[in-house]
Length: 231
Image (tube, helix red, strand yellow):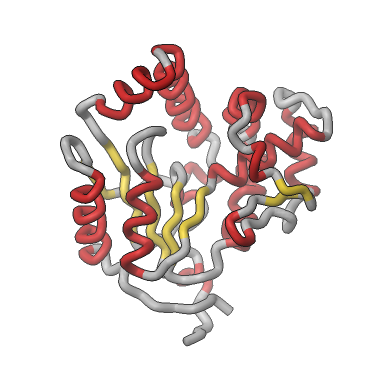
């Protein structure tokens, strides 16, 4: 089934978003919901990380706002995720998205207003299938009329403790630092779009219980559309 949507509908109809701090289980929950509704999953961080990798490849300093923004504008239309790979500017950056160099600079790159403007355009172009589940922060910056956006929270410290046990206290502290930077970056969003979210509290829940709760909330939000493609 293919339909033609109004501008307002195409801005969010069939979109379910998951946002929140790093390490709270958003990816696992997104894939659980997507499997139930037959929807693809998109991660907005892939855009920012691919752009950061391209910035470094072009020997541009991440702290040079104007040059980074120019590169983002020149790269419009080149971001893609075919078959699970991540491309930008004709380069496959899949295996470079989480290198220490990219991770160290992505928060800086994603904070520029010009970069976020390019990000909005690229995500709207990329996510044309409906329904779709999108992972990211402040998703109403891209889709003001998304059917639902869930803020994933967890208050028992399980993810932080697991990260510290696996990678050390410094890794856990870095996770918190990047989450705080993400929140600051969202403050430069064009139009200062207000987030309207529902809280998805996974405190004390197993991954299976998280998936059940998330699916119930998705149904309650009306996320059961089947639209093959926005024309």
